[in-house]
Amino acid sequence: MPDGPGPTDRAADAFDDADYPAYTMGRASEILGVTPDFLRSLDNSTELLMPTRSGGGHRRYSRKQLRLAARVRELLDQKHTLLSAASRIAELERDLQETRARLAEFEEPPPER
Image: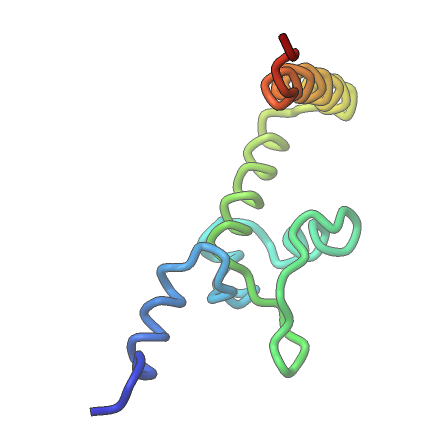
């Protein structure tokens, strides 16, 4: 018996991995109900998705990237404006800063007695 996982095991593991680039642009756009141009725009203008490229240069998307693209589409469909997005980003940055400050309190060594 050969040692280690066989090709079938590795393929099954890859499809369980949310980061595995399993979907072509055509299939991804079909799953999401968007145009390939929409997916391209998330890569070209925003660098939000950054799909893996196949040996032939074709974009390949992971499940995690498809979830992100679906969320962007959902937000756009809800008519979120640039101002509301910027406000939300500022809010999240503030929350992150506060959380980091609280975390730093736990990381400091206790005062010596």
